[in-house]
Length: 199
Image 1 (cartoon, rainbow, N blue to C red):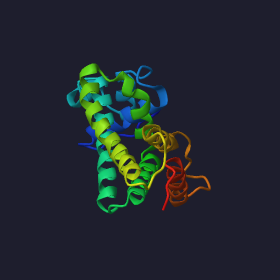
Image 2 (image 1 turned 120 degrees about the vertical axis):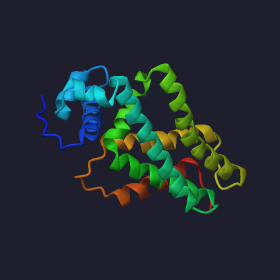
Image 3 (image 1 turned 180 degrees about the horizontal axis):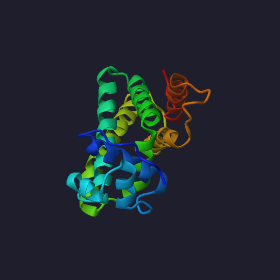
């Protein structure tokens, strides 16, 4: 059982969000009780319920914030990438790798617990997730149409690249020998090989 530090005045909402994120990542959604979250946040149950209606509300908040931030990062990277499909693909790989490294816990929770969203929340958030997926699809399809990418199965290529980048959150160790810049470069090279890029 974790021991929580005293919560600063006015910091209850942030403490609850942080406690829920860490608890879901460590114990899973079903393995975490609302009491676990309150205890970890250093708050009473009544204080927690002042901010959130329950565990599902917290899961929705965490996944929505994570997905929106990832989408914003991708759009920002593409805004600076120009028109070349390879450069745009590399920009999206960079944004994804950097996000998965810097937000490993959030990425883990979103990937593992998406299935535990209530249907009404999943339907709404699926639209946001699909918008991010379309960014990848449009780049790969454009590269194929212009003859820059020679992959025979563009949708499979897209899925392979996205899966590889997303998996980084599961194994990357910030204290290890591999710098983020090197990771970005490696995965950019992998992505270009997958789509069979021809300069």
